[in-house]
Image (cartoon, rainbow, N blue to C red; front, side, top):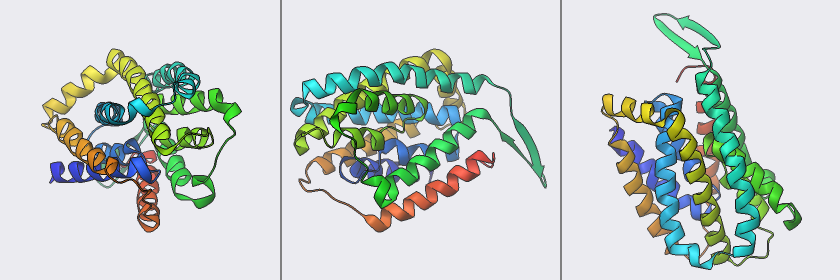
Length: 262
């Protein structure tokens, strides 16, 4: 059942990330959080996210606008390193609050709180109409790269901000998708470098010890299938009711994570 849930989430999220505004990390991270500690979930999601973005890069990278990708991508990479270091520092902090309900013990940590706030905030950003349609003038591309890169480094939540800053850059649909793929790969590589030095090795040992390491390649395969299907759809697909439902579930999970329940 674990594999079914992860594969369905990864495939569906990967399909949506090309067209609907919801990002792969936005939907896949909560799934991994249900099974593993938050740092292991972030690392596992980052690997799947990078594999998916590499495929998109191969399919859409040739259409990328080099000028926009350079201005946005350099700032994003530098900020992604900073964001990833914030997460690694948070994972090293002691438990903030511990409490018990009945026979169960719950812990609230800095890392859980950070991920919970970002998960809930970006769920709202991607679901509410006014926020989802937010756009920023092209002169703020470098700022956009820094913001999306930083949050991408912390938790992988970068797609909504990246789209808001790139959508008014005068790019065609293919150029927009290709440019976002280039920037996403750069951010993923940057944060995985930091994660790898800080906690990814231990996180993957934890996954292996719990028998869950196979969820990563399963999620990667499902995400790749979703991307291939998505790139064959030339029109923009939106699922408003699905977006609202998913956003509500993400908000509930964010509250549970912030309270240390998961």
